[in-house]
Length: 230
Image (cartoon, helix red, strand yellow):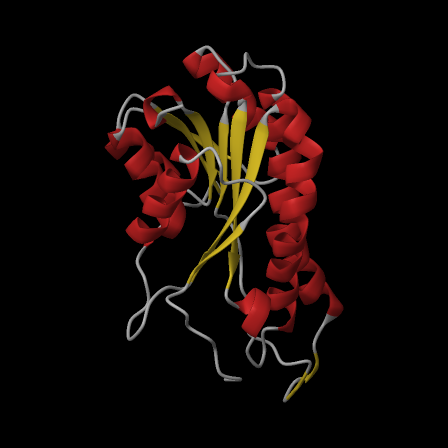
């Protein structure tokens, strides 16, 4: 299924990886729902991308964004890309005392629970669609980080949240295989003497969608970079 046949929901879509992915999708004929916080630049980005793109000011109400896709484009989403996330740099023991539990829980809730919530609700909509060539109904792409493997000092919450996303990828793919839904993970923090850019992430997302043999995999888009302790 080409990008021109895609109806996508993209979280964290008002900036960075999400915005670059949305831009690539729209340029290639996809119809897109941008999901981000009400305080983000979502309205501005949607206006710039044109009529095949709408903004859903989403915090916890993912179902509303999925409903918007159906009402706007006449069919359910068949692609979900999770780019939303937060990062806190807090040592377990620090000058202010001990790492507060609510800070750890907030990071897990946004990064891990938020990713799973979008995946499960999008999968439900995809499961009701007519299968395309090869029986595929949809693709879900999540975003982790090099911190899932090489968390730095102060990244205990962030690394845990991203490691959990890596861990859920294969079980999700197995859960959804009988419904014709692929599950994939892209990790960002690319290349040798430079960091990568959002467009390179978006290029990977398109490659994942185009290649139907990619399923249940974690793809490291990091140029073999390994992070030092700090």
